[in-house]
Length: 253
Image (tube, rainbow, N blue to C red; front, side, top):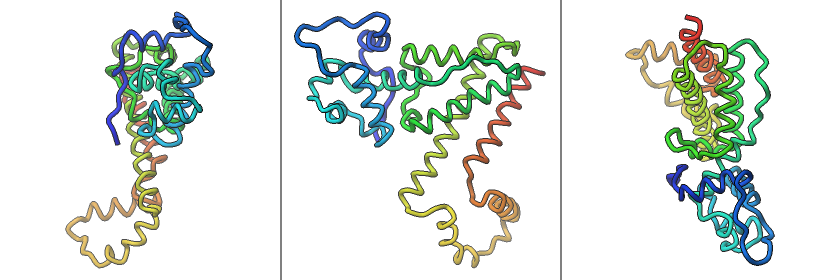
């Protein structure tokens, strides 16, 4: 698994591509190309969704579009710029209905659930999203603007709102990454969690757990309640409620 991040391409060219629908791209001489920048980005996103971020390359995108790799380079300088365009595009495609609820908890729950849905639909985003060097395109700005508005009426100052949003989104990313880990382990092992525990049960039943009374008691209680050692949905519900409780100390305290 390679290391990928946004903000690694040529800044001027990346910004020009990110804001292409506003600034317009310079026209090139010769016949009009059969494919556009938008086609290249869409193909890259489809590859990332289907096969993961490591599968995304200029050559693979070209093959998906049925064109030569050099034709892709006429639209996008390289993979570094393409990654920024991919992330900004999926952010721009996120639904942003007006905030009508008067409940800040309901609004922030919607923010969290919307981001969870995005990361589930595009799992590669958990590897690519960067807090310190995000792609400075219309998708990032539209997403940030919409999610900041969910804090309207809370009485928090601007710096605290930014920190609170970062805190909330950090929880979402952590939870989805944990969920992805569960799926990867299940796929790699060919066993569900229930099958794995059943396979280990004969040995576990022979061991002496008396030195670990709390671990035994709590582990059995949690396992019985969840049906497994870790349930992503239960962890999500519990954790999101605690995140909102923590923010309530700022907003309502």
